[in-house]
Amino acid sequence: MGDVRYERFVRSDVPAGDPEIARVDELAQHLRTHLERSSAAINLAHVHRASSSAIQRIVSELLFTELGFREEVVLTPQSGFVTQARPDFFYRLGPGRGILAEVERGGTTTNNHDLKDLWKAHIADDAQHLFLVVPNANWNEAGAAREHPYRRVLGRVGAFFGTPRREIDVLSAHVFGYGKSDQDDGTTEVLVIVDDEGNEYELIGSTDD
Image (cartoon, rainbow, N blue to C red; front, side):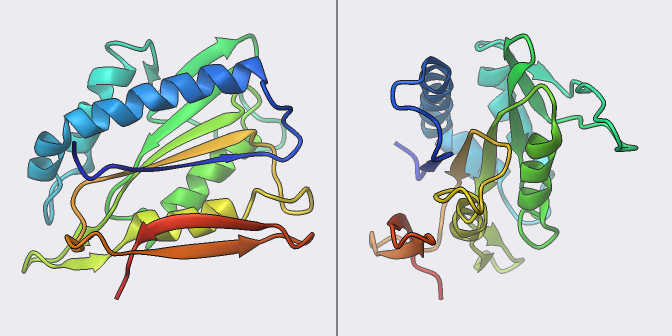
C-alpha cells in the first residue's frame, strides 16, 4: 500500500448512524483505496514543477469513471455572491445534497487553496460535504520536502469542527494525503485540538522539521 493518509471531520450536531454520512463515508473509503493502489503512479507524477492536472487525472479515474462524480460542474448560484462555485468534482447525493471534491498540489496552504475549498463548500446551496485531496509533502528542485501540506490542512480544517461555536455549514470534511513524505522511519506526532468545552481531538500526522 502507498503512503496515503486520511482524516475525517464531522459536525457535532450530526446524529450517529446518519444514512447520508454513511454513504459519504463509503465513497471516501473507495477514494482512499484507489489512492493507495495508485501510489506508484502518484509518486511519479508528484514531482517538482509538475502540473496538478496529472494528479487530478489519477483521481478522476475513480471519481468520474467509476463512482459517478461529475467534473467541474457549475453549482447553483449563491444569493449575494458574484462568482459561482465550480469544484474539480461534484457528486449529487439527492435534491440539493452533494459532495465537492477538490484536488490540490503546490498552493494547498501557501495560497490557502484548502480554506478556499472549505469556503466553497460552506456557501454552496447544493453541497454539504467536502473531499480534499492534498500532498503529504511538496518538493524542491533538490528533491527534498519544502513543506508538508497534509498535516497543516488537518489543523486548519479541523479548527472548523468539534464545537458549535466554530462550526460552519459543512457536515463533513474528508482530507486525503497523497504521495511520499520525507519520513521513512514511521515517526509520527500527535496534534491535539481542544474545543471550548475541553474536549480533545487527536490528529495523527508525520513529523515536521
